Image (cartoon, rainbow, N blue to C red; front, side):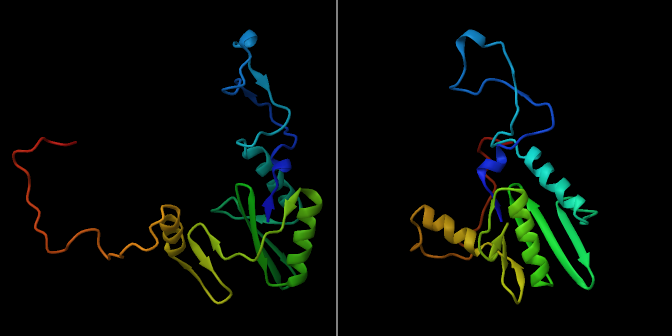
Amino acid sequence: MDVKSAFLNGFIEEEVYVRQPPSFESVRFLDRMYKLRKALYGLKQAPRARSLSSLLKSEFVMGSVDKTLFLLSRGGDTLIVQIYVDDIIFGGSSHVLVSSFAEQMNREFEMSLMAELQFFLGLQINPERIFVHQAKYTKDILKKFDMRHSKPMTTPMSTNTALDADEDGEAVD
């Protein structure tokens, strides 16, 4: 699930003060700070804290190592929820439990249900296995710089090249 931008502009409970944003400064009030009433797009902690506290109230147990990982056990079923900035990744052993969680999050926050998870932070995920690699990231970079047809190399330079110290060169720190 992805948190929509309206959620990022939700009300906050903390007192937060900011300077005037660049390009929006009022020349008459350069010395003033502003108190926020709603979370700004770059201020991720406030909406994240709101969603975390709602999860805690819903019988979830916070991970002891990763504080953005939550577990819910009901009967013999388990729901696992991972929150990453404004994305929520979840799955479980029961379709009913997963569906009710998605509905609860949609009721409480303005969210959009994306698609089934395929990639997350360098992890490729499919029903049979999860493994770490950078193939998709590398392909995206090559595509971005129009280098998809470049010749692949296993090493960045020849393995037979002998390198010698440059005794006459300038020392580099």
